[in-house]
Length: 366
Image (cartoon, rainbow, N blue to C red; front, side, top):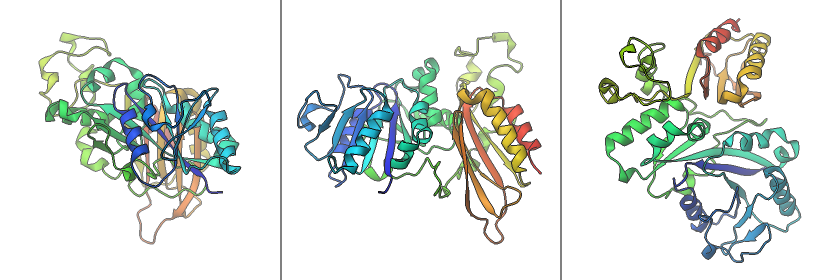
């Protein structure tokens, strides 16, 4: 049986997750979808699209989709769904898991790799994060969970952009880009998104038949002005501004930090990303030792990390990625004739020690 694609839908409270879900379920796309809700709040999938609101864990909907709540844990719910599908008791083609507004998607994503039974039935397609433009600045400042959701995303949808000014949207997009350069961002109206932008994004591949994602880090160069190795983005806290000290979490009200510095956000977020590149090949044993040590120490703070590596001893690209302490790598396609062999890695995490990581990676080269 083909693997069932799964999508994790996460996002701030009130960002439009339910609107997006309803739309996906009601659109006549001829796909049967199973929705797993982390909790039925008041704002759940409304009864008008449910056939029966029984105590049963799985509810059949009028459009052939099904909906269920997580009663025990996600793993048993997924196993139940897969078993019913195999026996022909339920018919669905894909799964969408809606997390609660403040959940960390990490453990949800890890379920798909840690559990062999789940991995035999499901394939994690991508993590979608909805960001509410109107409340984003406040939520990102106040809540680490909101920042983590941005760090985890394969795709970011920004809702309610019509309620704020264009410069505010621009500042938000820059801020999100700093936190997570590899997730494309798209402004959406009331969570109205074309199905093709929600499913089969293949943002998240940690499985053996890995196909390299061709757009991996494709537009980082457009943003190179935001990533001067050591300067211009880290200046918000620290260098030479001691005449108005403020704690790292505080908002700095110094006027030059508001919008005077081009489009740089004045808030230094703890979720950050950085990229490592090298034309020299990695030594497989050294790299494995170093990454193993790093994941041991910093795993809980490492949200997503991903790369295409030029590895000594093989003519194929090595595709590597991970979530928290779980890391996997696979052999990808051959390096093409005349193609520059280059390793590129991106790390997204909470206050990761960039210098230690870059230095360790450098020392893992041949």
